[in-house]
Image (cartoon, rainbow, N blue to C red; front, top):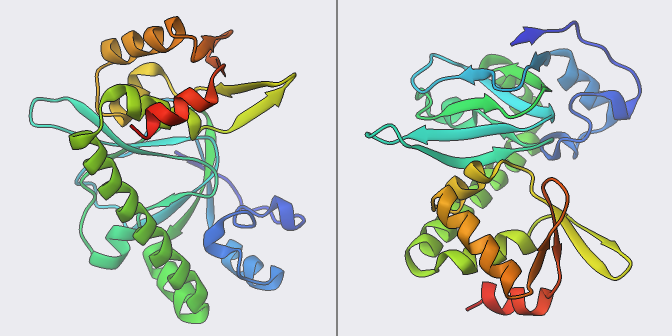
Length: 234
């Protein structure tokens, strides 16, 4: 990671301005938060930190995507979640003092706002809403993890895939609903607790059934949203 000198322009230029964690603050308070943030650039494929690393900082994604994953005993990678702009990681170490049990890798070039835990503690003491929003986010993550575990046990791959496609940001053009896969298929397969081969096979089956239509690159047209919805809920 490479650090940059802090630069504070207008509200929209602040590294923290669009982060839900800090959106309850006034602009003056956001400036105070930004003053202790360390803007950091990451390259595609760069490992930000590894499991067991003695890291004591909260990392907020400003631009780009960061993959959070764990390795099984047989070396298999399991993606836990993918962070986008406004998401953060490092709160567990802040709350418990434990070292991370996961890896953080940049999926594309991007930038982070990095806070030392000591500075974060001071900010929470000064602005309790930051701590409250952090706990709310951690609670939502726990709910999502429980739902994902339940789905992995009780829901088949086609249903998980349909639910995933319906949850992607969609673009509506000429009556069509188009989504773009945000990750490589192997990473999506890991998120859905399946194999890349199984994911490709079920995408082909959805296309053969007329529910989707593969587009250019990672684009997919959802040609039968109602059928996908039924499949996701089955």
